[in-house]
Length: 216
DNA sequence: GACCAGGCACATC
DNA sequence: GATGTGCATGGT
Image (tube, rainbow, N blue to C red; front, side, top):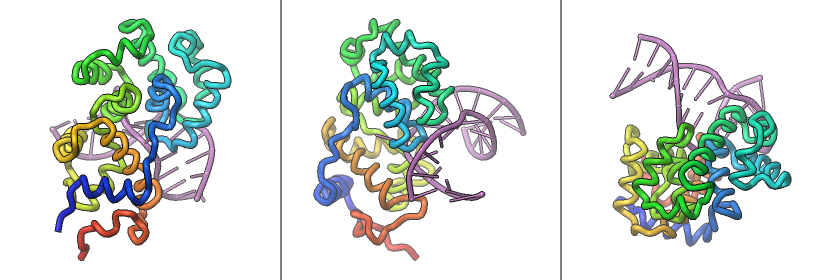
């Protein structure tokens, strides 16, 4: 008995409700959050973003003008603050040089070319690029993260050795090619991953317990 | 005190 | 091409 991805999606949506992602107010805030949350608990990222907000720095030109040392101190709670300072500045330089700091201009580009350009920015990898494209630009691309790999390898939907692109491709082939579906499904996956499919899983209470393959 | 969190780039073999 | 390592804070 195998379960279609659409069934996983509908089941989680019914049990957990709409997640209303991304947890950010503006497209620029989402871009910043996507970089800050790399390998980091979201609650830590929230503190960093609150610092930027209180200093009225959630703006491409203002953030670019801020000295690296000051930016690093403000985003300190998000961890890896030195490397993330550099990554944020790399993204800002890209945005300012190519689109005059205007995300609307940047998002007017077609999905595939823009994805390639984002990946060329040092510090933006596939998950960060896709998060920006899906949640800030609202383009139809599926985001793969550690939870996605963990949950669906445990469920034997994908193989252990599948790479980012293979997993993404699998999801996009088996789901409606639709921004809202990709948005909601990824958010539901993170929810399930955070609460039940942890390194030490709590399968008994997981919304997807009924879909677990029989283990010997 | 150990473990974990919505990655990514880089060194080394 | 595969594998290992540095980056860092804050919550459980």
